[in-house]
Length: 235
Ligand SMILES: [Zn+2]
Image 1: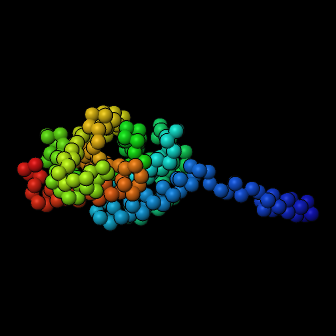
Image 2 (image 1 turned 135 degrees about the vertical axis):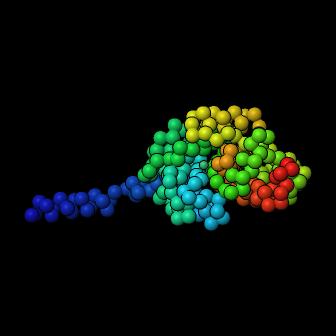
Image 3 (image 1 turned 60 degrees about the horizontal axis):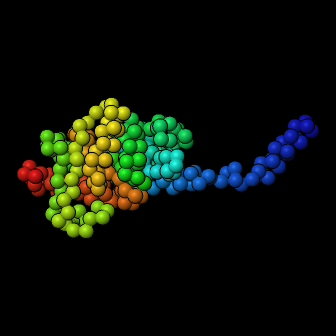
């Protein structure tokens, strides 16, 4: 009994003296925790707006560039009750390095965007408006947004006269092929702020999370305007 008591004491002492570094997060860990908390709040807000219903949509933020690591939503979650614990850290091959669960199949698209435009955050929504417009304009290859004051919410846009081209890519379940298509679109259309997948949804991004969130709000607003006003039929 005495031996057991001593051992217990030793373990207790060891634990008390263990360096705080053990419980302190690494720089990546801190960035991951901050990104997950912020993404969870953004995701719940998007759900409340009806943009990510039925477990749809996914969100990511770059937490290190070299090597490329992203904090990203685990697959199949109700975005209305998203918590920071439901995020994963993944590397540039979509392997999970932190957290439980697995990333969405669309994680490869997030990686393609993070690499292709040096995005710090990538947000993907499945709204009614993007689904309608990406179907009705698929044959034109994209949608032109022009003349709207709200365009000035897109990074670098200074006037309502700006013409924003929102490419529409054919939807696919082959994420390797779709990822290559996304990379090609980003190379061929420099300066775009987002793109649509046909009858699927919107991808947009930003240098940071708040910029990416603003781009979702602006593009979703403009797509809703196009559909509600009937302007989309003549665009
Ligand atoms: Zn999707």
